[in-house]
Amino acid sequence: MSFLEISDLLLKAGDKTLLSNISVTMEKGEVLGLIGESGAGKSTLGLAAIGFMRPGCHVASGEVRLMGQSLLTMLQEELRQLRQQKVAYVAQSAAAAFNPFYRLEDQVTELRALQKEVSKLERREIARSLFERLQLPEPEKFGRKYPHQVSGGQLQRAMIAMALLNDPELVVFDEPTTALDVTTQMEVLRVIRQVIAEQQCAAIYVSHDLAVISQISDRIVVLRNGVVVEQAETRKIIDNPAQDYTRALVAHRKVGEFVGQPSEANAVIEARALDLGYGANTVVRNVDLQIARGEIVALVGESGSGKTTVARSIAGLLPPRAGEIFMNGKKLADNVDHRTDDIRRRIQFIHQLPDVALNPRQRVRAALSRPLQKFLNLSGASLQKRLDDLMDEVELSRELLDRYPGALSGGQKQRVCIARCLAAEPDILICDEVTSALDALVEDSILKLLWRLQRQRDIGILFITHNLGVTRRFAHSVIIMESGKIVERGLTKDVFANPGQEYTRRLLASEPTTRQGWLDDQLATTS
Image (tube, rainbow, N blue to C red; front, side, top):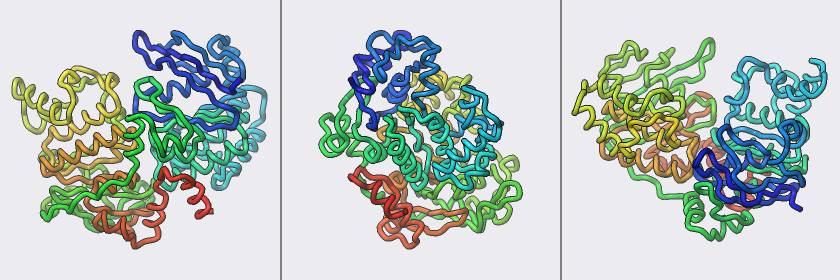
Protein backbone atom coordinates (compact mmCIF):
# COMPACT_ATOMS: atom_id res chain seq x y z
CA MET A 1 0.00 0.00 0.00
CA SER A 2 1.34 3.43 -0.97
CA PHE A 3 1.80 6.20 1.60
CA LEU A 4 -0.59 8.40 -0.43
CA GLU A 5 -2.99 6.93 -2.94
CA ILE A 6 -5.37 9.06 -5.03
CA SER A 7 -7.59 6.93 -7.23
CA ASP A 8 -9.87 8.12 -10.05
CA LEU A 9 -10.59 11.40 -8.24
CA LEU A 10 -13.37 13.42 -9.87
CA LEU A 11 -13.75 16.79 -8.17
CA LYS A 12 -16.40 19.31 -9.16
CA ALA A 13 -17.61 22.81 -8.31
CA GLY A 14 -21.26 22.77 -9.27
CA ASP A 15 -21.33 21.43 -12.82
CA LYS A 16 -17.72 22.42 -13.53
CA THR A 17 -15.10 19.66 -13.39
CA LEU A 18 -11.92 20.75 -11.55
CA LEU A 19 -10.11 17.40 -11.44
CA SER A 20 -11.00 14.65 -13.89
CA ASN A 21 -10.31 11.04 -12.82
CA ILE A 22 -6.91 11.77 -11.30
CA SER A 23 -4.84 8.80 -10.11
CA VAL A 24 -1.54 9.48 -8.32
CA THR A 25 0.50 7.58 -5.73
CA MET A 26 3.56 8.47 -3.67
CA GLU A 27 5.74 6.89 -1.03
CA LYS A 28 7.09 8.09 2.31
CA GLY A 29 10.13 10.30 1.81
CA GLU A 30 9.26 11.05 -1.82
CA VAL A 31 8.85 14.53 -3.29
CA LEU A 32 6.11 14.73 -5.92
CA GLY A 33 6.09 17.80 -8.18
CA LEU A 34 2.81 19.13 -9.59
CA ILE A 35 3.21 21.46 -12.56
CA GLY A 36 0.86 23.08 -15.05
CA GLU A 37 -0.63 26.41 -16.07
CA SER A 38 -2.99 28.50 -13.96
CA GLY A 39 -6.29 26.70 -13.48
CA ALA A 40 -4.76 23.29 -14.20
CA GLY A 41 -5.80 21.99 -10.77
CA LYS A 42 -2.36 21.84 -9.10
CA SER A 43 -3.32 23.49 -5.81
CA THR A 44 -6.72 21.76 -5.81
CA LEU A 45 -5.00 18.37 -6.07
CA GLY A 46 -2.44 19.29 -3.40
CA LEU A 47 -5.20 20.30 -0.99
CA ALA A 48 -7.22 17.15 -1.80
CA ALA A 49 -4.17 15.12 -0.71
CA ILE A 50 -4.69 16.43 2.83
CA GLY A 51 -8.46 16.07 2.71
CA PHE A 52 -9.32 19.71 2.09
CA MET A 53 -11.85 20.89 -0.46
CA ARG A 54 -12.48 24.56 -1.16
CA PRO A 55 -16.01 25.85 -0.42
CA GLY A 56 -18.42 24.89 -3.18
CA CYS A 57 -16.33 21.89 -4.27
CA HIS A 58 -17.37 18.27 -3.86
CA VAL A 59 -15.97 14.85 -4.71
CA ALA A 60 -18.20 13.19 -7.30
CA SER A 61 -16.24 9.94 -7.26
CA GLY A 62 -12.85 8.47 -6.44
CA GLU A 63 -10.76 7.98 -3.35
CA VAL A 64 -7.98 9.68 -1.37
CA ARG A 65 -6.12 7.45 1.10
CA LEU A 66 -3.29 8.66 3.32
CA MET A 67 -1.39 6.08 5.38
CA GLY A 68 -4.19 3.62 4.68
CA GLN A 69 -6.98 5.92 5.89
CA SER A 70 -9.71 7.27 3.61
CA LEU A 71 -9.75 11.05 3.94
CA LEU A 72 -13.09 11.33 2.13
CA THR A 73 -15.01 9.31 4.72
CA MET A 74 -13.36 10.83 7.80
CA LEU A 75 -15.44 12.84 10.22
CA GLN A 76 -14.55 16.54 10.47
CA GLU A 77 -13.07 16.06 13.93
CA GLU A 78 -10.86 13.23 12.65
CA LEU A 79 -9.71 15.41 9.75
CA ARG A 80 -8.95 18.25 12.15
CA GLN A 81 -6.78 15.94 14.25
CA LEU A 82 -5.01 14.67 11.12
CA ARG A 83 -4.19 18.20 9.97
CA GLN A 84 -2.92 19.16 13.40
CA GLN A 85 -0.68 16.15 13.79
CA LYS A 86 0.18 14.48 10.48
CA VAL A 87 0.00 16.94 7.58
CA ALA A 88 0.93 20.57 6.89
CA TYR A 89 0.41 23.16 4.18
CA VAL A 90 2.76 25.97 3.11
CA ALA A 91 0.89 28.64 1.14
CA GLN A 92 2.14 30.65 -1.82
CA SER A 93 1.90 34.10 -0.25
CA ALA A 94 3.39 34.26 3.22
CA ALA A 95 2.47 37.94 3.44
CA ALA A 96 -1.21 37.07 2.97
CA ALA A 97 -1.08 34.02 5.26
CA PHE A 98 0.26 35.81 8.34
CA ASN A 99 -1.87 38.14 10.45
CA PRO A 100 -0.17 41.58 10.46
CA PHE A 101 -1.39 42.33 14.00
CA TYR A 102 0.41 39.47 15.78
CA ARG A 103 4.07 38.71 16.35
CA LEU A 104 5.62 35.86 14.38
CA GLU A 105 6.37 33.68 17.41
CA ASP A 106 2.71 33.77 18.49
CA GLN A 107 1.46 32.74 15.06
CA VAL A 108 4.07 30.04 14.46
CA THR A 109 3.28 28.31 17.79
CA GLU A 110 -0.48 28.90 17.82
CA LEU A 111 -1.30 25.27 17.01
CA ARG A 112 0.71 24.04 20.00
CA ALA A 113 -1.24 26.38 22.26
CA LEU A 114 -4.53 25.05 20.87
CA GLN A 115 -3.51 21.45 21.52
CA LYS A 116 -2.38 21.88 25.11
CA GLU A 117 -1.57 24.52 27.66
CA VAL A 118 1.82 26.02 26.92
CA SER A 119 3.27 29.03 28.68
CA LYS A 120 4.41 32.13 26.84
CA LEU A 121 8.04 31.30 27.64
CA GLU A 122 7.64 27.74 26.36
CA ARG A 123 6.10 28.97 23.11
CA ARG A 124 8.95 31.46 22.69
CA GLU A 125 11.51 28.70 23.13
CA ILE A 126 9.69 26.44 20.65
CA ALA A 127 9.66 29.29 18.11
CA ARG A 128 13.33 30.09 18.72
CA SER A 129 14.28 26.45 18.13
CA LEU A 130 12.34 26.35 14.85
CA PHE A 131 13.80 29.66 13.64
CA GLU A 132 17.30 28.44 14.47
CA ARG A 133 16.64 25.21 12.58
CA LEU A 134 15.65 27.20 9.50
CA GLN A 135 18.70 29.45 9.89
CA LEU A 136 16.74 32.67 10.35
CA PRO A 137 18.76 35.66 11.63
CA GLU A 138 18.90 36.20 15.41
CA PRO A 139 16.39 33.39 16.16
CA GLU A 140 15.99 34.51 19.77
CA LYS A 141 14.74 37.93 18.58
CA PHE A 142 13.19 37.04 15.22
CA GLY A 143 9.90 35.81 16.67
CA ARG A 144 9.15 39.13 18.33
CA LYS A 145 8.95 40.86 14.98
CA TYR A 146 5.76 41.47 13.03
CA PRO A 147 5.35 40.07 9.49
CA HIS A 148 6.01 43.41 7.80
CA GLN A 149 9.35 43.76 9.59
CA VAL A 150 11.04 40.84 7.79
CA SER A 151 11.88 40.10 4.17
CA GLY A 152 9.80 37.94 1.85
CA GLY A 153 12.27 35.07 2.00
CA GLN A 154 12.43 35.22 5.81
CA LEU A 155 8.64 35.26 6.04
CA GLN A 156 8.42 32.23 3.75
CA ARG A 157 10.86 30.38 6.01
CA ALA A 158 8.78 31.39 9.04
CA MET A 159 5.78 29.77 7.35
CA ILE A 160 7.81 26.60 6.80
CA ALA A 161 8.69 26.72 10.52
CA MET A 162 4.99 26.88 11.36
CA ALA A 163 4.32 23.88 9.09
CA LEU A 164 7.04 21.86 10.87
CA LEU A 165 5.73 22.55 14.37
CA ASN A 166 4.36 19.03 14.88
CA ASP A 167 6.81 17.10 12.66
CA PRO A 168 4.28 16.29 9.90
CA GLU A 169 4.52 13.21 7.71
CA LEU A 170 3.22 15.00 4.59
CA VAL A 171 3.83 18.65 3.66
CA VAL A 172 2.17 20.38 0.71
CA PHE A 173 4.30 23.28 -0.60
CA ASP A 174 2.03 25.47 -2.77
CA GLU A 175 4.17 27.76 -4.97
CA PRO A 176 6.41 28.71 -1.98
CA THR A 177 9.03 30.56 -4.07
CA THR A 178 6.94 32.09 -6.87
CA ALA A 179 7.27 35.73 -5.80
CA LEU A 180 10.88 35.51 -4.57
CA ASP A 181 13.99 36.75 -6.34
CA VAL A 182 16.46 34.16 -7.60
CA THR A 183 18.92 34.27 -4.70
CA THR A 184 16.18 34.20 -2.04
CA GLN A 185 14.43 31.43 -3.97
CA MET A 186 17.58 29.34 -3.92
CA GLU A 187 17.91 29.79 -0.16
CA VAL A 188 14.28 28.75 0.44
CA LEU A 189 14.76 25.71 -1.83
CA ARG A 190 17.80 24.77 0.23
CA VAL A 191 15.74 24.96 3.41
CA ILE A 192 12.93 22.87 1.91
CA ARG A 193 15.37 20.21 0.70
CA GLN A 194 17.03 20.13 4.13
CA VAL A 195 13.70 19.88 5.98
CA ILE A 196 12.46 17.00 3.81
CA ALA A 197 15.72 15.09 4.33
CA GLU A 198 15.76 15.63 8.11
CA GLN A 199 12.07 14.84 8.60
CA GLN A 200 12.02 11.93 6.14
CA CYS A 201 8.53 13.14 5.32
CA ALA A 202 6.69 13.03 2.03
CA ALA A 203 6.17 16.30 0.18
CA ILE A 204 4.04 17.61 -2.64
CA TYR A 205 5.62 20.60 -4.38
CA VAL A 206 3.27 22.73 -6.49
CA SER A 207 4.83 25.13 -8.99
CA HIS A 208 4.53 26.55 -12.49
CA ASP A 209 8.34 26.76 -12.78
CA LEU A 210 9.71 23.59 -14.35
CA ALA A 211 13.30 24.46 -13.44
CA VAL A 212 12.43 24.69 -9.73
CA ILE A 213 10.34 21.51 -9.87
CA SER A 214 13.19 19.65 -11.56
CA GLN A 215 15.59 20.46 -8.71
CA ILE A 216 13.31 19.51 -5.84
CA SER A 217 11.15 16.58 -7.05
CA ASP A 218 11.69 12.85 -7.50
CA ARG A 219 8.69 12.53 -9.81
CA ILE A 220 6.59 15.06 -11.73
CA VAL A 221 2.88 15.07 -12.53
CA VAL A 222 1.95 17.44 -15.39
CA LEU A 223 -1.60 18.80 -15.18
CA ARG A 224 -3.71 20.72 -17.66
CA ASN A 225 -7.39 21.63 -17.32
CA GLY A 226 -7.79 19.21 -14.43
CA VAL A 227 -6.38 16.23 -16.35
CA VAL A 228 -3.04 14.43 -15.90
CA VAL A 229 -1.17 14.99 -19.15
CA GLU A 230 1.89 13.02 -18.15
CA GLN A 231 3.61 11.66 -15.05
CA ALA A 232 7.05 10.12 -14.74
CA GLU A 233 10.39 10.38 -12.96
CA THR A 234 11.79 13.90 -13.07
CA ARG A 235 14.67 13.26 -15.45
CA LYS A 236 12.42 11.43 -17.90
CA ILE A 237 10.03 14.41 -17.99
CA ILE A 238 12.91 16.85 -18.51
CA ASP A 239 15.00 14.83 -20.96
CA ASN A 240 12.33 12.96 -22.90
CA PRO A 241 8.82 14.42 -22.47
CA ALA A 242 6.16 12.30 -24.16
CA GLN A 243 3.38 14.85 -24.66
CA ASP A 244 3.26 18.07 -26.73
CA TYR A 245 2.18 20.19 -23.73
CA THR A 246 5.08 18.91 -21.62
CA ARG A 247 7.46 19.54 -24.50
CA ALA A 248 6.18 23.13 -24.67
CA LEU A 249 6.91 23.60 -20.95
CA VAL A 250 10.41 22.18 -21.33
CA ALA A 251 11.10 24.27 -24.44
CA HIS A 252 10.08 27.42 -22.56
CA ARG A 253 12.99 26.90 -20.16
CA LYS A 254 15.57 26.94 -22.94
CA VAL A 255 17.48 30.18 -23.32
CA GLY A 256 16.05 32.30 -26.15
CA GLU A 257 17.61 34.90 -28.36
CA PHE A 258 18.38 38.37 -27.04
CA VAL A 259 16.14 41.14 -28.30
CA GLY A 260 17.52 43.69 -30.73
CA GLN A 261 18.97 47.12 -30.22
CA PRO A 262 16.85 49.84 -28.59
CA SER A 263 15.76 52.86 -30.54
CA GLU A 264 18.04 55.89 -30.84
CA ALA A 265 15.27 58.32 -29.81
CA ASN A 266 15.83 60.92 -27.11
CA ALA A 267 14.83 60.01 -23.58
CA VAL A 268 11.17 60.57 -22.72
CA ILE A 269 11.78 60.00 -19.00
CA GLU A 270 15.01 60.90 -17.28
CA ALA A 271 15.73 60.52 -13.55
CA ARG A 272 18.76 62.31 -12.18
CA ALA A 273 20.51 61.54 -8.87
CA LEU A 274 17.40 60.24 -7.09
CA ASP A 275 17.49 59.65 -3.34
CA LEU A 276 14.31 57.94 -2.08
CA GLY A 277 13.10 56.69 1.25
CA TYR A 278 10.35 55.91 3.73
CA GLY A 279 10.15 57.47 7.16
CA ALA A 280 13.64 57.94 8.55
CA ASN A 281 15.22 55.46 6.12
CA THR A 282 16.75 56.37 2.76
CA VAL A 283 16.54 53.18 0.69
CA VAL A 284 17.62 54.40 -2.79
CA ARG A 285 20.65 56.58 -3.42
CA ASN A 286 21.91 58.51 -6.45
CA VAL A 287 19.93 56.66 -9.12
CA ASP A 288 20.05 57.85 -12.74
CA LEU A 289 18.05 56.28 -15.56
CA GLN A 290 16.61 57.15 -18.95
CA ILE A 291 13.79 55.59 -20.98
CA ALA A 292 13.24 56.44 -24.65
CA ARG A 293 10.32 55.74 -26.93
CA GLY A 294 10.62 52.24 -28.37
CA GLU A 295 13.00 51.12 -25.61
CA ILE A 296 12.49 48.41 -22.98
CA VAL A 297 14.64 48.95 -19.90
CA ALA A 298 14.69 46.17 -17.28
CA LEU A 299 15.30 47.13 -13.66
CA VAL A 300 16.62 44.00 -11.95
CA GLY A 301 17.63 43.12 -8.42
CA GLU A 302 16.78 41.16 -5.30
CA SER A 303 13.77 41.90 -3.11
CA GLY A 304 14.41 45.11 -1.22
CA SER A 305 16.94 46.44 -3.72
CA GLY A 306 14.76 49.49 -4.47
CA LYS A 307 13.31 48.61 -7.88
CA THR A 308 9.65 49.34 -7.11
CA THR A 309 10.63 52.39 -5.05
CA VAL A 310 12.25 53.92 -8.14
CA ALA A 311 9.19 53.11 -10.24
CA ARG A 312 6.83 54.67 -7.70
CA SER A 313 8.86 57.86 -7.71
CA ILE A 314 8.76 58.14 -11.52
CA ALA A 315 4.98 57.64 -11.34
CA GLY A 316 4.75 60.47 -8.79
CA LEU A 317 3.69 58.20 -5.93
CA LEU A 318 6.84 58.79 -3.85
CA PRO A 319 8.44 62.27 -3.90
CA PRO A 320 12.25 62.09 -4.02
CA ARG A 321 14.34 63.34 -1.13
CA ALA A 322 16.94 64.51 -3.60
CA GLY A 323 17.22 64.54 -7.38
CA GLU A 324 14.81 65.35 -10.18
CA ILE A 325 12.65 63.61 -12.80
CA PHE A 326 12.20 65.02 -16.30
CA MET A 327 9.80 64.28 -19.14
CA ASN A 328 10.86 65.38 -22.60
CA GLY A 329 13.37 67.69 -20.95
CA LYS A 330 10.86 69.38 -18.60
CA LYS A 331 11.00 68.84 -14.85
CA LEU A 332 8.06 66.92 -13.43
CA ALA A 333 6.29 67.73 -10.20
CA ASP A 334 7.41 65.32 -7.47
CA ASN A 335 3.87 64.41 -6.41
CA VAL A 336 1.30 62.95 -8.81
CA ASP A 337 -1.36 65.22 -7.26
CA HIS A 338 0.55 68.21 -8.64
CA ARG A 339 0.96 66.81 -12.15
CA THR A 340 -1.41 67.70 -14.96
CA ASP A 341 -3.85 65.17 -16.36
CA ASP A 342 -1.81 65.08 -19.54
CA ILE A 343 1.34 64.06 -17.64
CA ARG A 344 -0.61 61.42 -15.70
CA ARG A 345 -1.93 60.08 -18.97
CA ARG A 346 1.54 59.78 -20.47
CA ILE A 347 2.97 57.67 -17.58
CA GLN A 348 0.97 54.53 -16.78
CA PHE A 349 1.69 51.91 -14.10
CA ILE A 350 0.82 48.19 -14.40
CA HIS A 351 0.89 46.57 -10.98
CA GLN A 352 2.23 43.15 -10.03
CA LEU A 353 -1.04 41.66 -8.78
CA PRO A 354 -4.11 42.27 -10.96
CA ASP A 355 -6.32 40.89 -8.18
CA VAL A 356 -5.32 43.89 -6.08
CA ALA A 357 -5.25 46.40 -8.96
CA LEU A 358 -8.78 45.64 -10.20
CA ASN A 359 -11.89 46.49 -8.19
CA PRO A 360 -13.67 43.14 -7.65
CA ARG A 361 -17.07 44.89 -7.67
CA GLN A 362 -16.46 46.72 -10.93
CA ARG A 363 -17.02 45.10 -14.32
CA VAL A 364 -14.24 45.16 -16.91
CA ARG A 365 -16.27 47.68 -18.92
CA ALA A 366 -16.23 50.18 -16.05
CA ALA A 367 -12.52 49.68 -15.38
CA LEU A 368 -11.62 50.43 -19.00
CA SER A 369 -14.15 53.23 -19.47
CA ARG A 370 -12.76 55.43 -16.73
CA PRO A 371 -9.44 56.39 -18.42
CA LEU A 372 -11.22 56.79 -21.77
CA GLN A 373 -13.70 59.21 -20.24
CA LYS A 374 -11.19 61.07 -18.09
CA PHE A 375 -8.31 61.47 -20.54
CA LEU A 376 -9.98 61.26 -23.97
CA ASN A 377 -13.47 62.52 -23.10
CA LEU A 378 -15.14 59.64 -24.94
CA SER A 379 -18.80 58.67 -24.53
CA GLY A 380 -21.60 56.85 -26.31
CA ALA A 381 -20.78 55.03 -29.54
CA SER A 382 -17.19 56.34 -29.68
CA LEU A 383 -16.57 54.99 -26.16
CA GLN A 384 -18.01 51.58 -27.07
CA LYS A 385 -15.90 51.38 -30.23
CA ARG A 386 -12.73 52.18 -28.30
CA LEU A 387 -13.61 49.55 -25.68
CA ASP A 388 -14.04 46.96 -28.41
CA ASP A 389 -10.76 48.01 -30.02
CA LEU A 390 -8.91 47.74 -26.70
CA MET A 391 -10.22 44.23 -26.09
CA ASP A 392 -9.10 43.24 -29.58
CA GLU A 393 -5.72 44.84 -29.02
CA VAL A 394 -4.99 42.81 -25.87
CA GLU A 395 -6.47 39.67 -27.47
CA LEU A 396 -9.49 39.31 -25.18
CA SER A 397 -13.05 38.47 -26.17
CA ARG A 398 -15.38 41.48 -26.16
CA GLU A 399 -17.82 39.35 -24.16
CA LEU A 400 -15.53 39.74 -21.14
CA LEU A 401 -16.38 43.47 -20.91
CA ASP A 402 -19.43 42.60 -18.83
CA ARG A 403 -17.69 40.22 -16.47
CA TYR A 404 -16.27 40.90 -13.02
CA PRO A 405 -12.54 40.24 -12.38
CA GLY A 406 -13.38 37.18 -10.29
CA ALA A 407 -14.70 35.45 -13.42
CA LEU A 408 -11.38 35.89 -15.27
CA SER A 409 -8.14 33.90 -15.21
CA GLY A 410 -4.90 35.42 -13.94
CA GLY A 411 -3.65 36.04 -17.48
CA GLN A 412 -6.96 37.61 -18.53
CA LYS A 413 -6.93 39.96 -15.55
CA GLN A 414 -3.40 41.08 -16.35
CA ARG A 415 -4.46 41.77 -19.94
CA VAL A 416 -7.32 43.92 -18.62
CA CYS A 417 -4.78 45.90 -16.56
CA ILE A 418 -2.66 46.36 -19.68
CA ALA A 419 -5.72 47.49 -21.65
CA ARG A 420 -6.62 49.99 -18.93
CA CYS A 421 -3.19 51.57 -19.22
CA LEU A 422 -3.28 51.56 -23.02
CA ALA A 423 -6.64 53.36 -22.88
CA ALA A 424 -4.77 56.47 -21.72
CA GLU A 425 -2.50 56.33 -24.82
CA PRO A 426 0.69 56.60 -22.75
CA ASP A 427 4.26 57.36 -23.75
CA ILE A 428 5.73 55.27 -20.92
CA LEU A 429 4.55 52.01 -19.33
CA ILE A 430 5.91 51.01 -15.94
CA CYS A 431 5.49 47.25 -15.52
CA ASP A 432 6.08 46.12 -11.92
CA GLU A 433 6.67 42.34 -11.84
CA VAL A 434 3.66 41.89 -14.13
CA THR A 435 4.43 38.23 -14.92
CA SER A 436 5.82 37.02 -11.57
CA ALA A 437 2.60 35.27 -10.47
CA LEU A 438 1.82 33.73 -13.88
CA ASP A 439 2.66 30.27 -15.17
CA ALA A 440 5.31 29.88 -17.85
CA LEU A 441 3.13 29.75 -20.95
CA VAL A 442 0.79 32.54 -19.80
CA GLU A 443 3.86 34.61 -18.88
CA ASP A 444 5.17 34.08 -22.39
CA SER A 445 1.88 35.22 -23.93
CA ILE A 446 1.86 38.40 -21.81
CA LEU A 447 5.45 39.19 -22.80
CA LYS A 448 4.65 38.68 -26.48
CA LEU A 449 1.63 40.93 -26.10
CA LEU A 450 3.68 43.70 -24.45
CA TRP A 451 6.42 43.32 -27.05
CA ARG A 452 3.91 43.67 -29.90
CA LEU A 453 2.13 46.64 -28.31
CA GLN A 454 5.42 48.35 -27.55
CA ARG A 455 6.46 48.16 -31.20
CA GLN A 456 3.07 49.12 -32.61
CA ARG A 457 2.61 52.11 -30.32
CA ASP A 458 6.29 53.05 -29.98
CA ILE A 459 6.01 53.08 -26.17
CA GLY A 460 8.92 53.15 -23.74
CA ILE A 461 8.75 50.44 -21.04
CA LEU A 462 10.38 50.31 -17.61
CA PHE A 463 10.17 46.61 -16.78
CA ILE A 464 10.77 45.76 -13.12
CA THR A 465 11.57 42.12 -12.51
CA HIS A 466 13.65 39.64 -10.56
CA ASN A 467 13.31 37.09 -13.38
CA LEU A 468 16.54 36.96 -15.35
CA GLY A 469 15.07 34.65 -18.00
CA VAL A 470 12.38 37.22 -18.76
CA THR A 471 14.98 39.99 -18.85
CA ARG A 472 17.08 37.97 -21.24
CA ARG A 473 14.21 37.52 -23.70
CA PHE A 474 12.40 40.82 -23.32
CA ALA A 475 14.59 43.84 -22.51
CA HIS A 476 16.87 45.87 -24.77
CA SER A 477 18.92 47.14 -21.84
CA VAL A 478 19.24 46.25 -18.18
CA ILE A 479 19.98 48.11 -14.95
CA ILE A 480 21.14 46.01 -11.98
CA MET A 481 20.32 47.31 -8.49
CA GLU A 482 21.73 46.18 -5.16
CA SER A 483 20.77 47.65 -1.79
CA GLY A 484 19.32 50.81 -3.31
CA LYS A 485 22.20 51.55 -5.69
CA ILE A 486 22.84 50.86 -9.37
CA VAL A 487 25.82 48.52 -9.63
CA GLU A 488 25.79 47.78 -13.38
CA ARG A 489 23.98 48.79 -16.57
CA GLY A 490 24.19 48.24 -20.30
CA LEU A 491 22.68 46.38 -23.24
CA THR A 492 21.16 43.13 -22.03
CA LYS A 493 23.23 41.00 -24.39
CA ASP A 494 26.45 42.63 -23.16
CA VAL A 495 25.71 42.51 -19.44
CA PHE A 496 24.54 38.90 -19.55
CA ALA A 497 27.42 37.74 -21.75
CA ASN A 498 30.12 39.51 -19.75
CA PRO A 499 28.93 40.80 -16.34
CA GLY A 500 31.37 43.25 -14.83
CA GLN A 501 30.27 43.02 -11.20
CA GLU A 502 30.36 40.10 -8.76
CA TYR A 503 26.77 40.81 -7.72
CA THR A 504 25.56 40.48 -11.32
CA ARG A 505 27.50 37.24 -11.71
CA ARG A 506 25.87 35.90 -8.54
CA LEU A 507 22.40 36.78 -9.81
CA LEU A 508 23.03 35.07 -13.15
CA ALA A 509 24.43 31.98 -11.44
CA SER A 510 21.30 31.78 -9.25
CA GLU A 511 18.89 31.57 -12.20
CA PRO A 512 17.40 28.05 -11.96
CA THR A 513 17.93 25.61 -14.80
CA THR A 514 16.64 22.09 -15.47
CA ARG A 515 20.19 20.71 -15.52
CA GLN A 516 20.52 17.74 -13.20
CA GLY A 517 22.41 18.68 -10.04
CA TRP A 518 22.19 22.46 -10.61
CA LEU A 519 20.85 23.17 -7.12
CA ASP A 520 23.45 20.93 -5.48
CA ASP A 521 26.22 22.73 -7.35
CA GLN A 522 24.90 26.16 -6.35
CA LEU A 523 24.52 25.21 -2.71
CA ALA A 524 28.03 23.76 -2.67
CA THR A 525 29.38 27.01 -4.14
CA THR A 526 27.58 29.25 -1.62
CA SER A 527 28.16 27.09 1.48
